[in-house]
Every structure is written in structure tokens, then in C-alpha cells.
Length: 305
Image 1: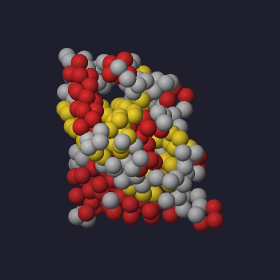
Image 2 (image 1 turned 30 degrees about the vertical axis):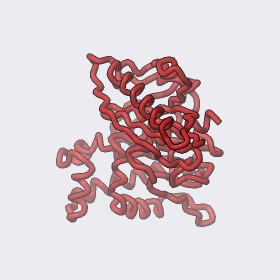
Image 3 (image 1 turned 90 degrees about the vertical axis):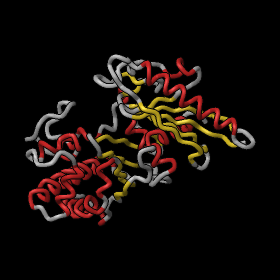
Image 4 (image 1 turned 135 degrees about the vertical axis):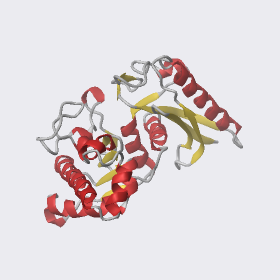
């Protein structure tokens, strides 16, 4: 009988669910459901939508030829989990009703709750580009910059579960404060949320910036290459601190591919400390928009078997 796990990724726009083979990582079924995050609903809609998604995936597992046993359920969401990974303990300003909502009580079964960026790392570690590596750093480059740390094959969450917020390291002390109070954070330097300010109002998205960059717009090239240099400086600082086997880059900004990787390699050549001429490999994440759900299932598998 096939053993499966369910992973749920709860975001502000979509609830994504996967039914996954625990041994191979094969995605047997995936589902999308709108979150409809509003203060008026205070979580009632999306809490029920998560339950319906789990129920639908479980029914699909039971209907498989020969049947399937769902061995674990995981859920990823923005915010900091509590010490036992049973709920999100801290997430102000988003998804009202999420904080201290115990999913296991609601679904009447154990649920392993994990930060969404940590989930992306778990997906890559167990079934993706980082499979087989014990020490890995991941940066998710999107609206902001998230991240995760894998040490000796295990997710490192740290005190208060806040480890891995790699976007909030400082790369420029003279720049604005981040949401955590850090001056000149990596998130402010390359995250999509600050692109309009960084480009003096000329661009409203990294996609627009890169289109101009490709056309040889000198201003766009200056803005983009400055951001990529800060990314390289941040990665170098992190590799000095953690000395990982591999750095994985995920998130929407990585869709720039060579427009990101080629200048990044140039700046890494300039700034990285390389004893014995050994450079730290940097690779793009394997999983796309289902990474959070896959990672939630992967985290649940790791903590259930």
C-alpha cells in the first residue's frame, strides 16, 4: 500500500495542497483554493478551505488503486511557528486569526506547522536540487527575501523559531531600516517590494526592470547590477558564517535566470572568500509555486517517521 503525506501552503492569495508519495516525492494530486483573506472574515473562510482541501486530498488517497494511507499532514504559512510547530505563534498584520490557531485541534489529527520559506528549503532538501546535501542555505527572492538554514540534514529554526530570516542581514548600513529594524537589509536591496523606490519611480516590478535591462537601458542596468552585487555580498557573508555545501535561490526574481546568475557569478568572484579556490555552488530551486506545500509535506514526513 502506498504511503502518502498531505502538504498545505497557506498564503494571502491561494491555499495550495498536495498529496505526495512519501518515498519518491511524486505529486499524486494538487489542489488550489482562493484564500480570500479579509479582516471581516477573520480566518473563518480560509480555515474551512484548508479543512476541505485536506479532506479532498485524503479522499483521493483512499480512492487510489490498492488504497493509500496518509501518514502525515504539514502546513506552511507566513510567520513564526511555536516551539512545537503546532501553530503560527507570531504573524502580525496578515491573515487575521492565524496566530495561535492550532490546526491539529481543528483537523482532529497531528499537523506539523512550518514557516513558508523554511518549507521551500525542506522541499529542495528532501526531493529537489539540494537532495543529498547536509548543509544548505536557501534564499527566496520575491516581494521580500526569505530563507532557511539546513544543518547536518535538519532544518535549523533557532530560538523563537526565527532563524533563517536571511533577508534581514545588513548589506548597506547607510540605507533604510527593514521591518526588523536592520539598516540596509538584503530584502530592501533586492526584494520586489522596494523596486519602485530603488529605481526612483521608473519601475514598479523587477520584471519591468529586467526588460529594460535586456534592452540596454543604462539606468536599469545600474539599478539591477547594484542589487545583484548586494545579493552577492549577502551570500558571501552567509557562506562565511555557515560554510554550506550549497546555496539555493528560489522565488519569483529567479525567473530572471541568466540575467541574475551571470552577474551574480561575477560579483561572487570578486567578494567570496575561497580557501583552496573552492567556490560555494549556487543553484536555482527545482520547485516552483508548489514548493511551500511540498515542503510542508516533507517537514511532516521528517517529523512523523
